[in-house]
Image 1: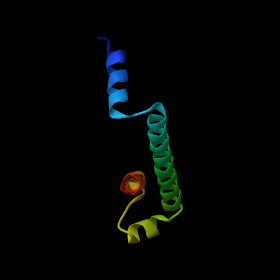
Image 2: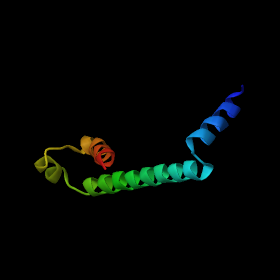
Image 3: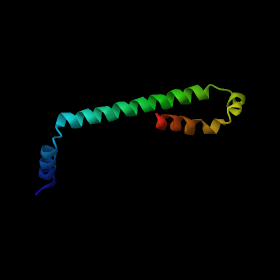
Image 4: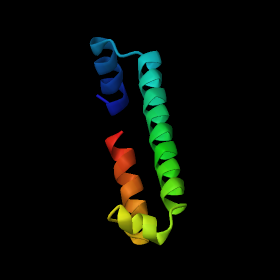
Length: 75
């Protein structure tokens, strides 16, 4: 039994259609795009702050990328 045949049988039995798989892929891509936009927005906003303002928030300029990544991961 070839792997492609086994996958076709599994998909037919489990009721997963190509349309369902495509919808899942589309949802994953939409989620990734939304997370990336949040990352970029956070990165841009924090980058506009002065070193003094960042310090008041308890962060340094070197922390901006990590903080933006964490914000996107929590979304």
